Length: 490
Image (tube, rainbow, N blue to C red; front, side):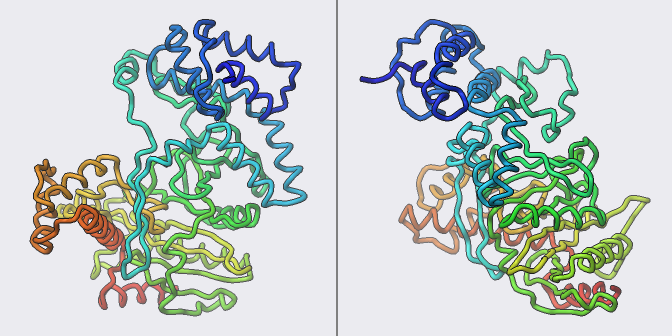
């Protein structure tokens, strides 16, 4: 016999939490207080906890307990899943108790909890379109991001009249833990943060709700201060990869155009994923005087990457800081590299840390955020002819070889495929030249699978070009000679 939806949900709570059978009546009454008392005789559609939660949310809408809007549904959904989520103190206590026995098990348990309680939107992430493309730099990964839902028009309209609030100060603040959510801020009732120490400062470890890769996580400072790349960045990143084995850790750059989407809060990203940049080889090695314990090399990658590797953590940090400070003040006008103009700094670094085969490793990606009349969006930013595929900033994840492309491309690429097959289509004007080129070079394509493969292959090659645009030193004889000139100054 099929269990009723409320009973099934309460059973799932008891099975997955510290609640016991004695708590059943209490839990039923608390859930009813949020979803209403009508429709509870409906059979459970599925036994899955998240599916039961979704069914209860729809009952709450039918009972007029919440508006029929995305923000209201997300808020109630997170609140319902909070019942299967231990309190922050319990989560942290269990994490560190397990950590003392097995670091890997502690991380795995927290990851499992973050999926089980629907903080990580597993079902939404599964909607993303993902494929790979072989390039001269290795296997580039492409993702068309469909997981983050578009804003509900009803919520947009309501937000115009809502009072402006500044709590939490941003979506990365500790104050998000347990926050109910509102029209202009996501629900976080089921959100938990693992606290840990870096050099006497409190930091947090959490997962990304809309992950772009395996175990995509965020390391965030407890204080709401702007991002900054400095010596402490390298110290912190190496501490993180020591603390969380198997994870890389990296930071977006700290300047507009070349930086990430949130520059107002000090944070890093990490996870358990091998990117194409990590697999790229060092094509030329150097020894820097005074830093003989560190191997330094230029990486075969479309962006300008120096790879540092050493068993001497202190000397590795010293050299990374030396490179950063040198780069901030370095100019080479012959190849359009300027440290500053009109008093504005242009140079910073995107750093990535990992432990490879027991050795400390830092990849330092040189960044320059100059603009020009020819390239008003950025000289080292996707140029106009490839912006039909990628116009947004090239942040940490893209730097490493994983494209995060906008959801508009799902339908737009389908229209290009139809155009290649001679079907009725509505190719976006900014794709037309590209579509014409593909058709001219493949005039007889008739198979739908082949058309999709052709378009995806082309998208991957365009993204490789995007990374070349973002590279300060171009992959030419002149560009690489200029790169070596900078290394010589070290």
